[in-house]
Image (tube, rainbow, N blue to C red; front, side):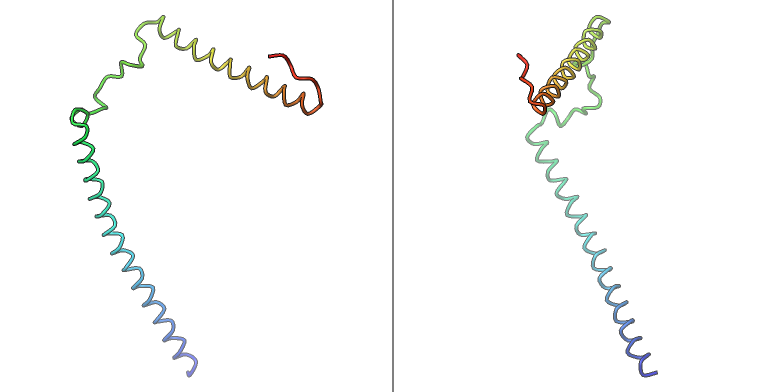
Length: 112
């Protein structure tokens, strides 16, 4: 019985401490959330003040005409350019690998 009372007191004190700490965290997170909301509103209003024409238009409603090819020729040209660029990147990587391999085996470097 003598050992049970101190252990019970320590267990109750520990659980009470945990409950208080949890309550403080919840209260703190609510105030943090309110502060974040206020900061976001202030930042948005400041941005809208600096960009009055952009703030009024919804960017999702604007047509994406700048990057959209209009004809089959333009679409084909765009795809060909991307494939050509990929081919050049692969060739450069292959050259780099060849140079590293040649350095590893003490072979002379290729002429660029």
